[in-house]
Length: 529
Image 1 (tube, helix red, strand yellow):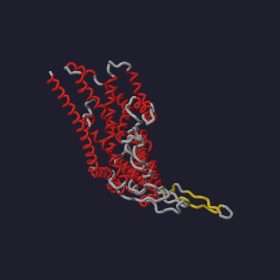
Image 2: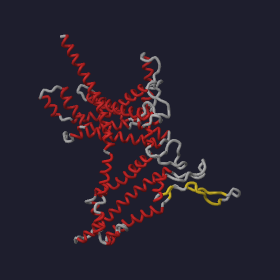
Image 3: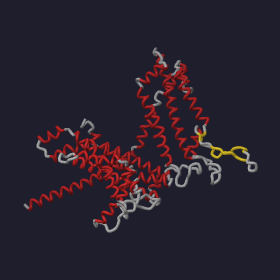
Image 4: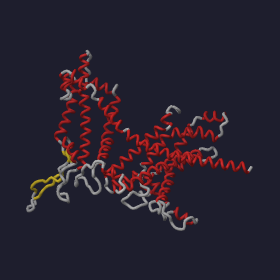
């Protein structure tokens, strides 16, 4: 009997050991796959650019044929936009193309100046206004903005107190990007104008009736309605996402760093110097980058899976038949979601502060002899990191609990009945039916949760402010995103902050694509449909 118990204990210990080894193997495989995905992404970047080039080149297919076969109207539409449509009596359409060209040429050559400012100059004796003086010459759009994009300004200003402002390099960079976007749109409109002229020419040659402007509008509301719907989205994405993103990326190649104020000092291009500084151990950024990146990935992993497993266990527990007052239990946990997160986090911070009730409780029952700091003033970085992970459980578990509760209610009952008929135990039904179903459905949630935790700002910033550690450097609990916030908002180190933002984007994008493409939710998309 004793031997049997000993064998069972050994078997149990071996199983636990195997599970632990398997767990850490999967962690190592995940990180190997993660960095491999980044490497593959960087390696395939040139081929992606080639594909993009081919896609753009397709837009020019037939360009020379249209010019060669085109009649007078089509040929002249290469120079005067809309002339081909007007020539073929599509007057309104042609005038719209012509208006686009005139508007673009006016903007390009008139170089309208923005943010120009002057001040009145008074006679020093009579104090009578005698004229005006330019304080800020302003920043032009048009072709001059393209020149300024290369130089980032040549006027250094006059006087340290700003008697005459320097060229605003930040606006020059922004306007240059904006002007390039306008030129790209103009090229697209130019090609569309030629295609339109050539099409109406061919329609007339083939005996077809030319379309009127009303018929074109009807087409736009019918067969090409998707274009009409996507156009506002495309404009919005370009203005509020694409152009600011390109602007931010370009900042990483300038020296717009500490102490430099746009409009007072000129910036210049520095190439890849800021990227190289991140990997130089002698620089402040280089000293902090790898530790912050490592902690960010560790945080994202544990914050995701502890919440995930905790939420599933809590949902299974609450959904048991033996548990009474299920709605009340769910309501208690939902309250943490209903309350604004910053209130919950600040309340928890006060509860576990050195003068808070948690410390007093630990002292009163004899666990601590004196108050202990758990967060930004903790003696050990490890203590602060464990503390934020535990507090994150309180914030994140209710989300997973609610989601899993809904999933459990939708697991097909006949599957359990079939398993029961086959003699499966409850544990086997849980292991081979419930768990695979939950994991399959929640894989996209896991990915978004992992990415969300990489860029989780509130929890770290409100609980520890990135500490414990001295100011000016990354703190012990700083994630890439909170470190980036400090660099850009507190230290005005925009160029290095932009580099960190680019690295953060590469990490999150690579992790998203890699984990999703390897998940069963992607490979077996039709399994549960």
